[in-house]
Every structure is written in C-alpha cells, then in structure tokens.
Image (cartoon, rainbow over all chains, first blue to last red; front, side):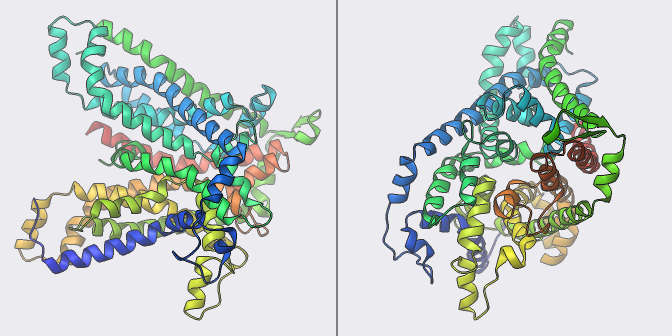
Length: 276
Length: 290
C-alpha cells in the first residue's frame, strides 16, 4: 500500500537517487565514452566529455586482433560449459532434496554450502600441481571442471529454493491420478520449474564469466577467457586506454544486460535464501 | 510422505552431487595438509623432506604474514564499512517514491556485473591516473594536488575499487529486505506520531539487522580472498603495501615456488574463512527450519 507522499519529497528523493546512481555508474559510463575516443583524446587533459572526435576504430582494432575473438569464445565455452554441467549434476540433487527429503537433508545442504566457503587460495597449490601433472594447465576442459565444481553448491542451493516453492498439492494430485515419477517430472514439475531453472542458469553463467582467480592462475593463452585477456592490458606499452576501454566494454556489455534481468535472483542466489 | 520408491530414487539422484563435492573438498585439502608438512620447492622438485610444523612456524613468524594479515583486515573492514554505511542510505533512498526508480536501480547494480580485471584496470587508468585520470582533473578543479593513488595510497586505492564492486550487492540485499518490511506497521507508527527518525531506529533498523549480518558474512568470505584486483593493479606492492593473505600465498606458490610454505599459508586462510563460515552457516540453517 502506497502512503501519501508530498510532491516535494518525491522530487528530493528522485534527485538524490539519480545523483547517487549516476556517480556509481560513472566509471562504466566513462569507460564506454573512452572506448569511442582516439588514444590522444583518451589522455586529454582536461578530459573531453562529449565533444571529441567519435570513432569506432578501437572496436575495429580489438576485433581485428584475432585473439580477442579467441578469448571471447573461451569465455563462452568455459562459462557456458561449466554452468551446463553444474546444472545437469544439480537438478537431480536439488529435486531429491526438495521432494524426497530425509532427516539428513538439512545437514547435506549446509555441508554443501560450507564447501563454497573454502577459500580458493587454500587449495591453489594442490590444484595447480594436479593440473600440471595431468596436462590440464591452460586447457578449457580444466577450467570448465574447476568452475563447475566451484559453482555447484550455489546451483544446487538456488534450484533447491525454487523447487521448494512448487506447491506440493499439485504433485499429490498428479500422484493420485496415477502419474509415475517420470511423468510427474516431465509434465508437472518441469513446466513449473522453468523460470527457476532459467534464472539459476543465468546467474551462474554470470558468476563463471567473471571468475578471476582460477582463470588467472590456471590459464595463460590457449584457454584464457576474457578476464585473463583484459588482465594482459595491465603491463602495456604505448597508448592503450581507448583500446582497453573498447575491449572491456565488449567483455562486460553482454553480461551487464544479462545481469539486469537477474537482479532479483541475485539476492536469492548469493544469500542462500537467507534474505528474501 | 515420501514413498519408499521415491526415497531410493532420491538417494540415487543426490549421490553424484554429494560425491563430487566431497572429492572436491577432501582431496585438495588433504593434499594441502600433506604438502604443508614438507620442505618442497618446485624449483628443486627432486628433493623434498618431511619437516613437521616447520612451515607453519616459518609462515606465521614471517614479517610478511603479519603485514599481509593486517592488510587483509584493513581491506575487509574498510570495504564492509563503506558498503554498509553507503548501502543502507542508498537502499532507503531507493525504497522511497523515486521517478524512474528502475533505471536508477540498474545503474546502481551494474558494477557488480563488471569482471574484476576490468574494474581494476578502468579505475587504475581512467580514474586514478595521477596525470590524466578523472580524479586528477577533479582535484585540479578544486585547486588540490592530484593524488598519485597507487604510489601514495595503494591500499586505499584497492579498497575503493573493491568497495565500488560490492556496494551494489549490499544495496540490493538491503533494498530487498526493506521491501519486505511491513508497511502497515510503519503507518501505524506514523499515525501514533512517531517521527521519521524514531520509526527508522525502532522499526527499520531492527528489521535490517539480519540482512546486514548476512551482508557482512558473505562479503567477508569473498573479501578475505580478494585477488584479481591486486594482481592487475599493484602486484602486491609497492613493497608489501597491498599484499593480502591470498596474494601472499599466491606469490609463495607460483612466484617463489615454495609449495610447503604456500600450503601452510593456505591452511591458515582456510581456518580464517571457516571462522566466518561457521556463523553464516548457522544463520542460514536457522532460516531453513523456518
């Protein structure tokens, strides 16, 4: 229920909110603007805000370097692959805990959560050595595996909270009508679970896309996703701000758009249902 | 009540996930524990010997560890303070009637989706560059000397970057919590003549206590192991000024190739994270029963 609010108060809140929002968004906006400048304009002092020579040459340069496409493809494969495999392992597990819970279900869930709390750096040495000895350093398969395991607890948790919300009565009714578990799964559960599945998929794709501990430590070139490619700009030669901005814009734009669709699920996914 | 058939099926479906997570948790951890008792260097991988707790003694008494621990605590504490002290008013503001609220929301959330290497490099070069950065220009506008962020205040620079990334998270969670607050209760308080301030202190703040706790715990777990932002901006330097525990372990493992020592450090990090995780798991667990 909306309370009566004076027009003046609305204007004050609106102005303040837009100011804050603008300030927080400014670094991203500035990066996008810089990506359309020439390298000279990017360095100009005082900065040029809108009145500069707009150019898309940086994007052309970044695209032309065949390696950008290569790293973007790696990002898609690694983030997409690890998310899909995690989903395939997680769906049955989450289904089982939501619909056939036992006395131990709660403990299992909390234990899964606690595996997510283990700091990656704590197992950096063994993982690095295993990867080295099995020839998995700088391979996509290695990254897919490690990111899949890293995100698996979140995927299971998110799916579990969604499955929990599916009304049990409908299942009971289906069972009364003699539906087998297989039919129940396909015709009753799946349609109701699709929104939850989609947002889980999306959020974990985003998390895997942005993952920057394992990707930086376990890949250098062949399997390196965009996180590693962008990091290579940290020790550049010559003028590079505009190109860095263009590469960065390309790397984050699709994810920000996806992210905006999942803002509600973000809270659920990252707080493990502790805040709704 | 689940039938016996569903229970058997349920267990079968759960097993792969549990088995994988179990292996993922136990094998590397056991290896870390084993390595931590060895004198083992990758530069000389033929010779390694059992040294007991020597690595822990070395790691914990290394002056670099104390510096890194201090940097870790300053970084975690500062980012928590910034994100909560700014996130709470921001969430309250976004909970008001605001024209174009959904657009403001999008702008506020966006930094969370920027990959860490991008945020770090954009802040370092485009904003914090001492000559051509946006901040330097703002400083000259007001007649101040631009700050050479990464030489004069490197840890603060890292803190600002990380805080910018996590402010959306705190804001979004607090906003979600505010929107579930009982409006009628607030109305009743207003009708009884409660001021906006006392409504905030006696109704809103207690309502936010739990989400704030959750924000603190989850952020702490991620902030304890901030890595990419340091890796691409300062490389832990100058000196050890921006080396946190995660970066110290990384440099011992993959720069100095000292497996034994890095493993001991890794276990120290695991213990620190577990202390935080213990409280988080309890809060989440309590919520599961409700």
